[in-house]
Image 1 (cartoon, rainbow, N blue to C red):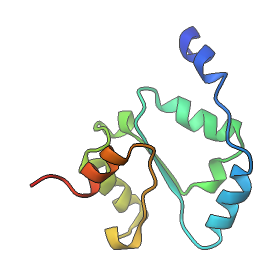
Image 2: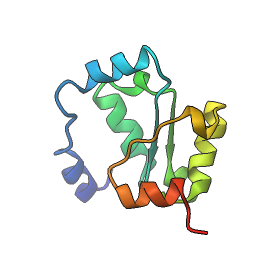
Image 3: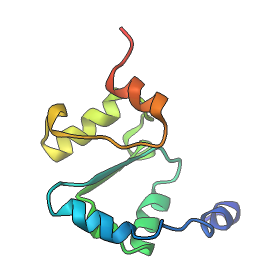
Length: 107
C-alpha cells in the first residue's frame, strides 16, 4: 500500500460495539457494503483487519464498478447481487445529499 495511504489508514478504527451491532442486524437482515473508494483493497482489507468480512454478503466499491455514488447504477448493481428489489432494502450512508440523489434522482 502506498505510504501516504498506509499512514492515513493506520488511524482508521471501527466504532465500539460495531461487531455486536452487525451480528444483531445479521440475525434478521442481509448486509452489504457500497463504498466510494479509489482503492478497493483498502475496503476489503479493513473489513478483514477488523474481523468484519463475514458480516457482509457483498462488498461493492465504486472503483470496481466504474461509477461512484450517487450513481443509481451502483445501487442497482448491488440490488442485482442481492437479488432484491428497492422496497426490500434500506441504505445507510454518511452523506444525506448523495443518498437522496441516488435514491430519488432529479427528473
